[in-house]
Amino acid sequence: MSNAVLATPEVPFESRGLDKKQTWWERLRKGDEVVHLITLAGGWSILVITGLLVQHLWVYSRLSRHAFGWHFLVDSTWDPVNGVFGAWPFVYGTVVTSLLALTIAIPIGLGSAIFLAELAPRKLSNALTFLIELLAAVPSVIYGLIGIFLLIPVLFNVVPYVQKYFGWIPIFNGTFYGVSYFSASIVLAIMVVPFIISISREVLISVPVSQREAMMALGATKWDVTWRAVVPYARQGIMGSIFLSLARALGETMAVTMVIGNVAQVSTSLMAPGYTIAAVIANEFTEATGDLYLHALIELGLVLFVVTMIFNALARLLMLTMKGHEVVG
Image (tube, rainbow, N blue to C red):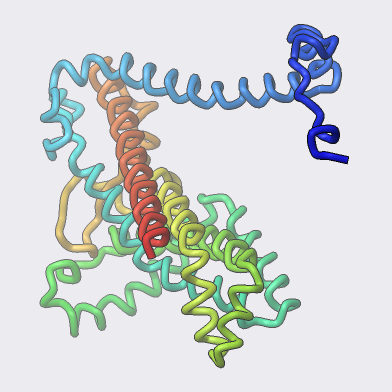
């Protein structure tokens, strides 16, 4: 029998006995269209909520924007009595504490994730992961209390030795009062480490076994397999966990408020007290007596939103760049 006999010509859509309306009804009856509409509405709702958030922040910061303009971002004066407001001390404190927290948290988090995913016995790994996930669920105010009653007394004993040997570096000199950029950064690092460990561990575990077996077949050791095959394969997921932790650090309020000192100043020393955007909004929003004062605080919220979006955009660009290098390689 020839191929011409066996071949069945494609039947036009109109001749199948079903029109588009009937097909849509069949899809609706089976649930396909319902699920499609629900998921489509969920996706659009994210855009709508984000747009409404930006619109409200923009509208209700009108007085501050008109009074100070772009100078609001670079002015260091925060004087509610005289109606002079500048955001720079808070932007500076937010960025410095968040980046320093990540500097401390990334080595600890990534090292712990590699140990739990690749080196630790499975039972021990599961037990420790459960405890780490519990740490991620602890309220931030608890971390603030730990910082006040446990961390700061320890730092009073440690910082003098740090300043003795590294006091010639500007970031370590000055008088240490307990509450400081440094204290807030350590508390933030403790808070974000569980996120880095939990997400990175899951990403490392999900690396295909073939990646490990291929390198073992070449005679590589366990550490060589982990560092040269598993970690590079999971690099994008690890970077995602880091920038998710950065977003958490940028917006943290209570724990930072309790240990940073809440002083609207810019200092090159990490031992000096400071302030963050989230902290000043939480502390002063209920006390804002005038419209200009209230609008200045709302504009700080807009600035924090923009800073977070910028860091997330940079994270996306970095991940796309890494992906491009992997494709080229």
